[in-house]
Length: 388
Ligand code: LLP
Image (tube, rainbow, N blue to C red; front, side, top):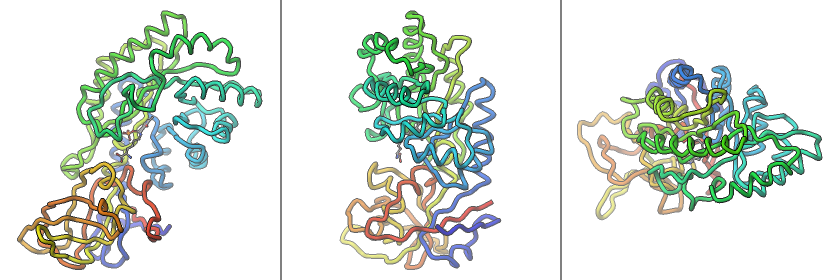
């Protein structure tokens, strides 16, 4: 991976000098976003774990670690990466519906903050492995609150029909088994209802369900030390330059208003997209303008291998022709070079009149962009620019 540092806002000559496609990150915006999230959370003494899955680029992780966020990991390699960057193990949560034995052992060896557990079967395995290592494993139960996040069906997770979390009807069985798990300490309850949620209503509904679960455990004299409400706060993909930073005050304010924790309980969140989404862009060049029957195609040198979201979720990203001097605007289907019809960044996208060689910026690719890239079609690995 080649890294470049650009000290000012990116200029035309910076684009032209380097081979496209490449990712760029606005580190100033990243830092501002982190500061806003941190100060909004501090108001209520909330703890934020950064969800590494959104972007595990080293340089970005170092900045997030410097700002003293915790880490939320979904694989053994993410746990290792968080430790390597310097996140303290006491701030590392390890989630995921299918943790392998090897991955669980990494968490145990490092005495992480908590395993977020998704099934009774998983708790059984963690208990056995912890016993073998003579350790106590701290766990949080990921409960399925059956709350609709009203987001894309592929990124909704909190419904009973989803594979995630333990369903409420399993809880009696689970707590009956609790005393037999000698190497398990139940410390928390964990929830995550989905991603790219822009209305506060699902979060309010989540609070109501969490209060019910929390009371249910208390009534059974089970001492819960922390509540982890997951991530999910969305960003503005349509006007990223107007609203680069999500409204963290509003988001945390909803939890402050509707969540009723018991006095000793810590409140944790796992934010990914909202912290990094708008600081990244994918930069590309037009290879060809191809005239179709109904539409003109702008064929870019970036494709679904660099940004998968439009292909698999029909996700919208704001696309801009940075170099065209034309006063005219036209509509294009903006597509990539990959041999798949779904390799399309958007249909009927209005751009300044576009020609071969123009530079195209696809905005808001900081989350689930670079991390979801692939080598399909034996594509090159792309350089990364950091703008300070
Ligand atoms: N916690 C858990 C348990 C999660 O599953 C996720 C995301 C997060 C936290 C962070 O959520 P965020 O704050 O980023 O919404 N690839 C999809 C998004 C998948 C989200 C997976 N889970 C996309 O590009 O939209």
